[in-house]
View 1 (cartoon, rainbow, N blue to C red):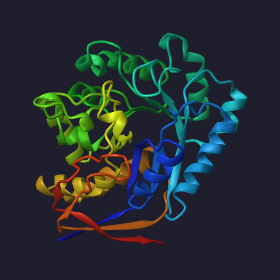
View 2 (tube, rainbow, N blue to C red):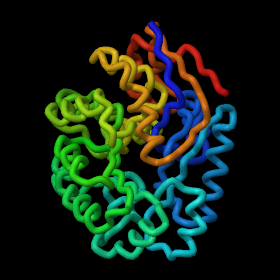
View 3 (spheres, rainbow, N blue to C red):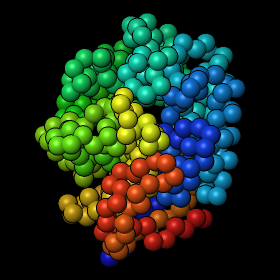
Length: 334
């Protein structure tokens, strides 16, 4: 049995810098025609010079594949001239509440004070991408942030707002209440719950932010993805960390899923008799929401088993060492 996907897109991806960028970026670029690249580096991508340099580095790391890096700016207060200059080079701006996740120390402290920048973004047609969590109890952080989304969607009705890596049924309910709200969901949040992370021995390579939630939340996310909800896009949130940052006290948050995404999505959709919806979920919806035209690629998957490597360099992938029933068998680039 075979499956073909046209120009798959990953609408939320961490590529890091330096040697890590060179290691992980080709693994995404070989299977995906494009990806939304996150800006939470150290220092963050929050000015035009940094944006140009990072874009060039990503293009260099992915040069062997027809891959479109859709770049983002780290949200802070910007003037109109800067945003006008940045607009042709970015797909959106990424808002992190201060300290809520990896490399977010420079994020937004006062969500009530960001209106002037949001007004400029609405005027210029720059989407707002949000890591939507509070600093409350870990399982409630997304739910506690939902009123912020609700307020912003009402206050800025012409601003495209993307709720990144949603993890709860409540977020899906809110998604349907505002025409300018959209969302991404990850592979790992479709497959695991908190029990997989900490129900037995702690599994550091499954620890991420937002943390995996309850079975009922996963069930709601699965139902929406499998029917290709028209406002829900695939975004892996693949976030590599070296082994010594994951298997350590103070374990870094992030799941490195890039090498296994399409095989596991094919398995998941096939097991639920939903393969006809995978193309929409992993590409078509994102093209419609963002108006992007990625490179023309065709990825062929077959029901042929393979075993996930234990590591790629010094990074352990999602489902390391497991044998998966589907694999990519051909990549055709126009």
